[in-house]
Amino acid sequence: MNIICFAKQVPDPEVPQSSFKVDETANKVLPVQGVAPVINGFDENAIEAALRLKGEHDDTTITVISLGSDHVLDVMKKPLSMGADDLILLQDPAFEDGDAYSIAYALSLAVQKVGEFDLIICGRQASDTDRGQVGTAVAELLGLPCITIGKSVTVEDGKVIVERALQDGTETAEAPLPALVTVSNELGEPRYPTLRGIMQAGRKSPTVWSAGDIEADPAKLGASGRVVDMVRLFIPVVDKECEFIEGENGADAGRKLALKLREVKLI
Amino acid sequence: MANSGTLIIAELNDGKLAGVSREAVAVGVGLSNELGSEISAAVIGTDTQAAASELVAAGAGKVYTIENADLASYQPDAYVQVILALVKKVQPKLILTGQTDVGRDLAPKVAFKLGASLTLDAVDISVEDGKLRATKPVYGGSAQATFESAADLHMAAIRIKAFEPLAADPGRSGSIESFDVSLDPAATKVKVTDVKKQESEGVRLEDAAVVVSGGRGLGGPEPFEQLEDLAKILGGAVGASRAVCDAGWVPASLQIGLTGKTVTPDLYITIGISGASQHMAGCTGAKNIVSINKDKDCNMFKESRFGVTGAWEEVFPAFLEMCRELRGS
Image (tube, rainbow over all chains, first blue to last red; front, side):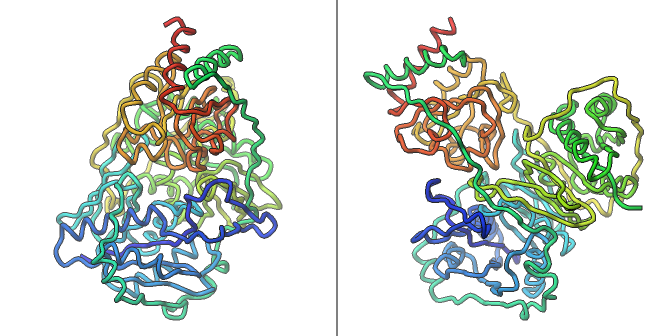
């Protein structure tokens, strides 16, 4: 089986809230000094799903494609260290500031250049934009059936079978291959790179493609090809003052908290 | 004929009209001057009449019912075909769904087939200079972004309870008609073969007036029994942060957050939750947040009305017992 995964490099979402700052005139997040970017968590779940399939099916290769403008190689090699086979970086200023349409356009051209595939797996959304659209957009451009929010992905008899995470339960869906599946954290923790994986990844160089390499029409890429423009980025003001309830010890404070809530008629 | 008005893709939950569908109708009505006053809605499934009447009472001028037993539960490609056919007929300027299990899957599928602009998890929608603006949380809820589009057609999936519904008016006039679509089996590639709904005992998390929520600070699954206890005493429901759901301490259906459930209780009690933006995105609508955490500088206290700094093992059992005493149970 040939599996393609998309992996986006994003700012580390685990930085403390107090470090998160926005330049509201430039509509840009101020990068936090000294904190390395990471691979989007849901895309790591996607690579994990692909690796599980590789474990179940002989002759399976996993090709990871990442679209971005400032890839950090140490970060982007992680999928290879986890066990993926090939890494393709789509790098070009023309790809920047896109929306789902223009990003999906570039990714779908890259997929077509990679060639034959059975399954595309990617995260349900990126932890910076939280857009949640690119996977479906790529499926539409490539004419693929699309199943989203998967927590388990299996393949049998030319079909992909996905258990989907619902808010209250599970839905099972299937589609004929080739297909595109997006996955969610309910799939389970992505495996850690092994020492062997890290060494093998160290010997590999990613393939780098520009807009020209994928024969993209510049008018459909990045900022040029987008249908929505981001006109404002801001941090909503929180104007709350916490009243701390104290006591002689923890238990005393706990009791006083309950009494306070009764006093203000919350319980 | 230029596109005009708003089409709401309504949802049924256990046969009843979803609250978010009423909220979406109100959004369309609120944008009548800018987008057109034709507010129509679609209901797909079985026994759609009651929901259709509710949609009229909520402000929809025209409701299309698509009665089909095969579509009683969500079938992605089939629902897409239905909506595409209806859009061709109705020619709206804006299509709305809720940000629900169905909406977050269906909206992108419909939007990309139509070339429409799309914003998911929208918390604000407006029109400026003839362009649609939609605002959504980004960076895990640490910030919000407003997107503007001059596309011919717009779509948005609105966050549950981010918009107020209109007061239900049974006297409102509106028409209900059935809409027939012949589905092309060749175009239905994805098949949903099974749905297992998790039945929750007691109050639904999304509807609870009181939510007691636990996080990583609790250290493991056992303390959640005490949270259940408190929730029972206060007539509420138990929730959890994503970390404890991922760790398998509690079922995933308890997850509150950006990709989990959105809750809007009068009282949201948190124990051992740091208050990362991804979690706050799911409880920002809570009217009063009360927190117990050992870290006095944690973000949760910045969003709380009352707080106790301390080890939960010392604070919470005494808090629980006093609540039990005060409630006379």
